[in-house]
Image (cartoon, rainbow, N blue to C red; front, top):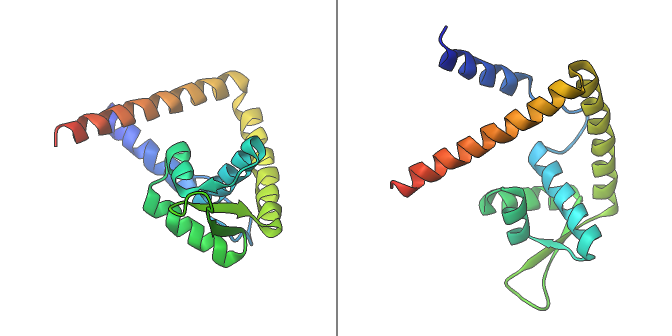
Amino acid sequence: ENLAEQLFQSFLRFRKAGMFFPSGLDASMGEIVVMRGLEKKAAIADKNFCISDIHKNLHISKPAVSQIYSSLEKKGYITREIDSADRRKIDAALTPKGEEILQNMKNYFSKMLDEIITRMGEDNSKQLIFLFNRLSDISEDMRNDMNSKK
C-alpha cells in the first residue's frame, strides 16, 4: 500500500475505534464539548455562554450549536434565556443535572486519557499531540485554500 492509502486506512481505523463513552451516558461528544464550554465561560467571566461564543471558541457551526442546545435543554442539562441587555443573544447555563453529568464525564475521560498516556508513554503522547495539531493546521489551511478558490 502507498503512504496515502495507509494514512486513509489509519483515519478510518481511528474513527471506528474513536472515543468511547461509558454505558448509560445520555450525552454525545458534541454535547459534552458544549457543556465544558459553558462551564469554562461561567467560571472565567461569571457569565453565561451565548451561541456565538460557542461557535467562535469551540469551532462548532452555529446550526450545530443550536441543535446541541435544544438537545441539552430537552434533557434538562442546560437552561436558556434571552439576554436582557441584547435581545438577539440567548444565554445558556448548566443546570445542576448538567453539572453532574459533566463532572461524571470529566472523571471518566480523565481516567481514560491517563491510561492512554500510560500505555503510549509521555514522549509518544507529546509527539501525538504535536502531530494532531499539525494535521489540524494543515487541514484548516487546505479548507481555506479551497474556499478562497470558489
